[in-house]
Every structure is written in structure tokens, then in C-alpha cells.
Length: 80
Image 1: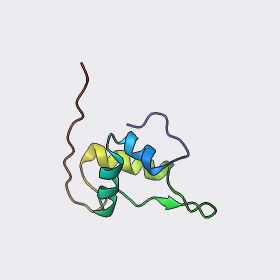
Image 2: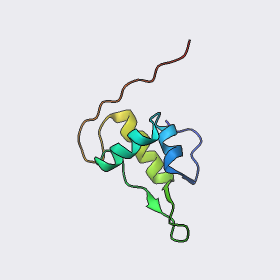
Image 3: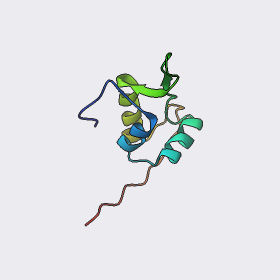
Image 4: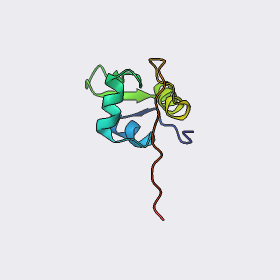
């Protein structure tokens, strides 16, 4: 679970929090597995607010995407 939740994080930071590469995270957004980010009105930059961060972590832990489909994630390899 996400311990130190920030008010907002970039898409790249959200990919790191879910232990996915940025390109894979974007693929999963396009497939409807993860929610679309919201955009700042002033800068037009995408970001994930606290609620969306929680949703992304929940999806990663449960394996059930926002689209309702099962998604299997590989476990990250731990360095010895």
C-alpha cells in the first residue's frame, strides 16, 4: 500500500509507485486498466491526485483493472 501519499504525482512518478516502466504504464492507461490522469488547467500537465493514486495502487494489488478485467502483473525481481 502507498505509505506516503502526496497531493499529486506525475505520470512517471505513478509508474514508479506501481513498479512499472513508464511506457508499460501508458500502455495500461490506453487499455483502460489504469485511470486516465487529470490535467492541470494552467500548465496542461497530466497528474494523479491522491484519490487516483489510491485507485492505481488498488488496481495493482487486486489485479482487477478499472475496465473490470483481470490483469496479471509480474513480480519485480529483487536484487540479492
